[in-house]
Image 1 (cartoon, helix red, strand yellow):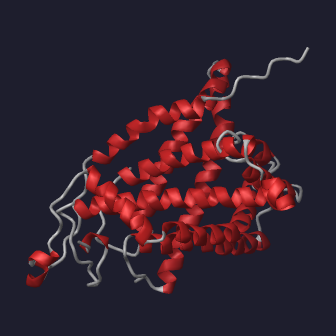
Image 2 (spheres, rainbow, N blue to C red; image 1 turned 45 degrees about the horizontal axis):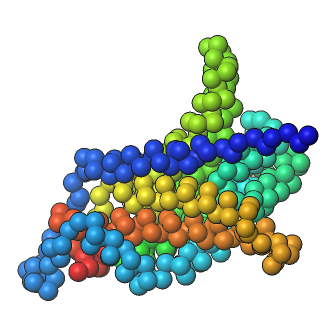
Image 3 (spheres, rainbow, N blue to C red; image 1 turned 30 degrees about the vertical axis):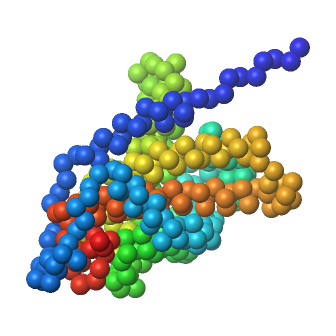
Length: 341
């Protein structure tokens, strides 16, 4: 008699319902935005900010700008550069991870995200991780530093593509110098790898800590249910940082978690879970694309993720446009999103 199949893991869906409370953090205390001098003609009726405020005008603005900014096409460009940057980033991750422990453990930890990530992503990323892990652990040296530096520089292209897309969303021209742009994007790329390493370390450390205090039976439950709210908070915070410092602008207000970043984090988890479910039950990428089916499914997931991230930025930009305290002129004199009427 065939044993009954285990019940599906519904923890991500439950967490998605509860995590809507993140949106309330968008109404936290806000820092005062830097102001800039306005000329007299900037106060003319034709250049004054629209008086309509609220969610409905903001949502209509996001819908309008979604078409005007060609978000789907921009997301396609981000997807292309993200794929080019993915494998160098994986190589850097495996190299750094191998300094501390066996890199072959990464493949098992990636499988824990199968509820959210589609099968194509697990297959592509897992295969690359397995190939790199079989090369053995890394040793610190000049050759190691050069290889990691080259991998980070190659992975940097994906982050710069996101910066460029955010400039379009916020109607900004790139005003940073070549050096400053690459330093900033490299810092974001390295910070992303560090966050991933910390998350992987937490999966190992948490059960050890609970075992030390005599709560071994609780460790599995904490890891199973606690990883999703933590992932959501970290993702929302990371997106808020990217939305603030990714575009080339100075007159922006900082929030620990903005409405756009909270929406993008929740929508990304939901969209990833739905796409994973669709690909597992109805998707026919292998039947249509043959051996490229996994890669096509993975590309589609990255494209959808890019759209969600850009829509979150559009939402933040529209809400910022309604803020009467935001200046209408950028310090360099160019028109940014907050200046549009």
